[in-house]
Length: 481
Image 1 (tube, rainbow, N blue to C red):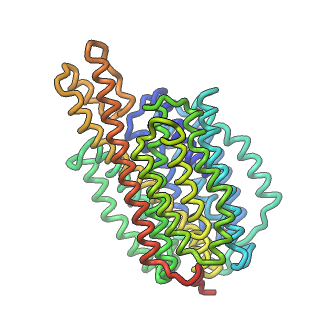
Image 2 (spheres, one colour; image 1 turned 180 degrees about the horizontal axis):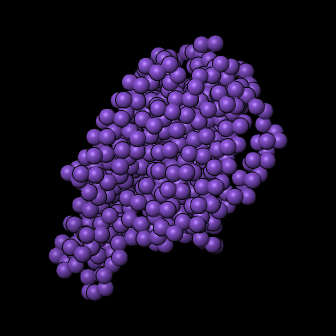
Image 3 (cartoon, rainbow, N blue to C red; image 1 turned 120 degrees about the vertical axis):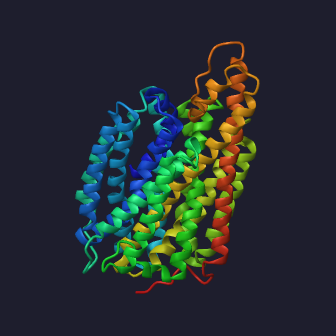
C-alpha cells in the first residue's frame, strides 16, 4: 500500500486538479507532503521497530495508513487532501523500514540478497499495478476510489501481519530520537516550501526566503544533534563505512532521477497526449513489471559478483532511457515514444535495486539493521521529495518563460500569464486568439517537460559516476558483525 500510494497519485493528479481547483504548486504538495513525512520519519519508524518490536510497529503504521486513506478519499478541498496525505506519510514511515528489518533478522547474510530481491519484486509489482489500478479507478469511478481501495486491502494486511509475521527487535535498542525526527522534519519541510514555491513566486518571495532560511538552520542542527546525542536515529558512525556512504549517495541521485520523471510523465501523457488515466497507468506498467520480474535475478547476481558493477550499469541504463524519453517528449508512437524508454528505466532499476539494498544491509551489524534500512529508505524518499520540488520549479520557470514568448502579440496575454502556475490547466479565454493560446500553452509545456527530464538525466548519470568512483569494487559486503 505504501508503494502504491507513492505512485498512484501521479495518475490522479489531473483529475484532482480539475475537481479541487488546485494549482501546480499544490499538486506538488499532494505528492511531496507524503514523501516528506516518509523521508523525515522513516528513521524514527526504524528505531521504534528496533525497540518496540517490528511487527507491532508495522501493524500500528498500517492502521494509521488505512485511516489516512479514508480521509484522503473524503477530502473536500486541496488543504484537506494535503493534510490527509501527511498522515498517510507518517503511517508509511512506520511500515516501510519494518519490512526490510524483519527480512534482515530472518535470513543470514549469504541468503539475504535473494530474499531482498523477492521483497523488491513484490513491492515493484504492486507499484507497477498501482498506476494501472489507479487509472482504472479514476476513469470508472473517481480519483477518491484510488485512496478508498486501501481500506479492504489494509484489513487483509493487518490480518496477515498478526497471523503470520514473527516478532523481532534489536537487543538493547536505544530510546527513540524524537528531537532528531523533529529537526529533520522541520528542515526538509522548510526546504521543500522554498523549492516548491521558487518556481511560481520567485527567489525574492518572503515565503521562499523563509523556507530556505529555516532549512539552513534546522538541517545543520539535525546533523549537530545526531553527532552528540546518545541515541541518534541516524548514527553518523555508519557513514564511516565507504560502501554504506557511497551507496546512500547513489540512492539519493538515482531515486531523485526516477521520482522526477515519474512525477511529470503521467501528467504529460494525460494533459498533452490525451491519454485517459487508465491508459497513462498502463503505459507505466512495463517499468514496474521489469523491476518486479528481474529484481530477484539481479539480487542473486549481486551476491555473486558484488554490487558495484550492477549499480553502475543500472544507473547508466536509467540515464540513457530518461534521455530517450526527453528526446521523444513522450510523443509520437507509444512504442518508440513511451514504451521503449519506460521499459529501459525499469530494466535499469531492476539491475540496481536488490544489489543496492543488500549492500546497505550487509554494511552494518544486525543490531543496526533497522537504522540502516531507515537511512536508505529515507535517502530514497528525500531524494524523491527534493527532485519533485526542483523538477517542478524548473518546469514552472521554463513554462512561464516559454508561454510569455508564445503569447507575444495576443490581447489576452496578461490574463493567461497570470495563471501560468496552473500549467496545462490554464483556462483558455474565448475569442479569436483561443487557438494560438492553446498552442502556446502546449508548446511551452513541451519545452518545460524536456528541461525537467534533462535535469533527471543528469542526476542518473551522476549516480553512475558515484558508483564507479566511490563504491568498493571487491564484493558487496563490508559488514561489521
